[in-house]
Image 1 (tube, one colour):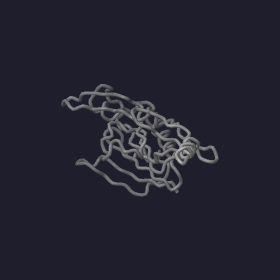
Image 2 (image 1 turned 90 degrees about the vertical axis):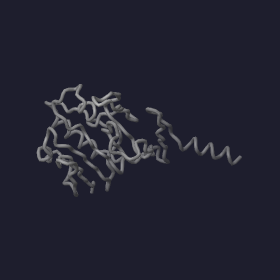
Image 3 (image 1 turned 60 degrees about the vertical axis):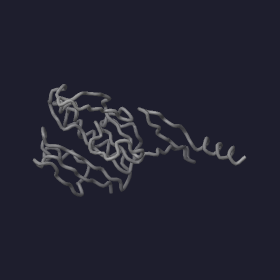
Length: 192
C-alpha cells in the first residue's frame, strides 16, 4: 500500500523524463502545472567541454549547435557531443530558468571550417558575428534567474574584448585574464 501510494505520487508529480544524448533530464510538474527542470546550470556552447572538471555533471545541460567527432592534426580525438542540440541565439527555455549560465561562444571569425582551431572552438560568421553575439548574450540573460550568475569566456584571437563590450547585457562584476599571452578573459555578471 505504501509503495503503491508512493508510485502514484511519483507518477503524478513527474511530468516527463526526456532522454537526450544518453542522459535523462527530469522535468517535474508543479502544483500550478508549471514544469521545473532538475538542471540548474546551462552551457549553451559546450564544445568539447574542455574547461569542465566533471564533463558529465548532472546539474548541467551541455548544449551546442554541433554534434561532431574529429581527429586533430596531432592525432588527438575531439568529440563535441552535447546533451542537447541548441543554438545559443535562440534558446528554447523559459525566462528565468537557470541559476548559472556559462557562455563560451566561438571566438574565431572567418577561420576555415576545416582547420583544427575551427573544429575545436567553432567559428563565428564573418558577416553576422556582432548580431550573433548580441542575440547570444540576450538569450543567456533571458534564461538566467534573478540573482543568477553569467560567466562569459572570451579569447581575443580574432576579435578584441573592447570590440564586444557594448554587447554585454550589463556591467560585469569582475574578470580575469588567463594564458601566456593574456588574451583569454573570464568575466562574471550577476543579474540584479
